[in-house]
Structure formats: C-alpha cells, structure tokens
Image (tube, rainbow, N blue to C red; front, side):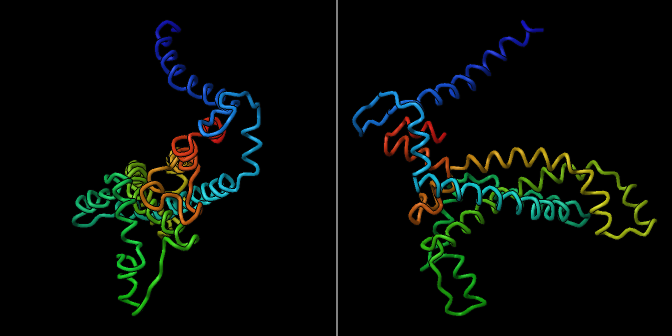
Length: 259
C-alpha cells in the first residue's frame, strides 16, 4: 500500500510542505532588497514587526470582516436562490444557466467593471439609485466604509450563484415524499424548511463553508482589480498585503512572515 501511495505522497509533500517550510524559513531572515542587512537572520523580528504595523492590522481586520460578512450572506442568499431554482416553473433550466454567468466571468474583469459601476460621477450604481432618489450622488470608492461594502457586494454577486448551484445539487437528493408526508401532517413551508431541508443539507453547507471560507481568506484579485487596496489601506486584504510587501516593496522576509 505504501509503495502505491508513495508517489502521490511525495508529490504532495514536495508541492505543499516544501513551500510552506521554505516560507517559514524565509520569514526568519531580513530579505529586503531596499534595506541594509539583507540576508541577516532576525529570528522572530518580522513577526514582532507585524504587531506594530498599522497596514497589516488594518488588512487583517478587513480580511476578517470580509470573510465573515461574505459567508453569512453566502449562506442566506445562496440558500434562498437555491430554493427558488429548485421550484417547478417554466424556464427553470434557462434561469439556472443565466444565474451562473457572474461566476463564469473572471474576477479581474468583474473588478474592473465594478470600479466603473461604483464611480461617483458616471457609475451604474448611482445612476440606478437616481431612478428613485433624484440628484443622488455618492463616491462609493472614496469613503472607506462604502468601499468595503462595495468590495463585499461584488464578491457576493460573483460567487453566490455558484454557491447556490452547489446547494441546489444537495436539494435534488431530498425525496419529494418527505415533503408530501410533512404537508399531510400539517407542516407549512417554513416548518418544512427548518425541520426537513436544513437538517438534510447541513453536511453540504459545512463542506461548502470550509472551502468558501478558505477562498475568502485568500482573496486577492477582487481588491487588486477594483480598489488596489484603497482608499488608503481600507480594502487591503491579507493576500493583497502580502503581494505588495513581496513584489512592490521587495520585502520578502516580512511578506513570508505575514503569509
């Protein structure tokens, strides 16, 4: 068994553990090409530096907010969309296909389009709001709080359809006989959802939650293409901060410590 599993284990060790260990090793050195002492062993110096780095702390704060808010709305809106797509109506297959279009688009393209959509002067978002509130004007990507909201909203618009389709696949395996029995016992739609649907898709949601949370924690492209971490450092996610430290500031040791 070990002979058969050996090649796969060696590949996983080489492609996973080696980069991980090398990143930790690099984090113990001053590998800054712009500062003196390049290559000097600093021990935990890069880690203690993070505690006083406002940019890192702000990136960590927004990453946690981004991940938590994104997952809460993924669950609420994703389950809602999945339930809607699970209903019987004409054009259901077409609607399922159309709902996946945002997910099929590259995030960089979505981020660039969103940057135009949230523009304060000629953006699509302000133009839509002016249909209901004449004269409305707001610079979404200039204010820190609204810029964060915009980034989270774009992330949700992009990935909720994919989340919903995966939840829908779990709903397809729930027998209609169970709902029929519940209706005969007097259960309404709400009671059926909490007593039948939700318990039977809990494992699906747990698995999806693990993967989607991991993807949120490592998100980079939405910030890179939409806000470049601004205004200031308000929308800088950890992955974006690592990229800036490593490839813009050429501070590889500190970037490795953050990673």
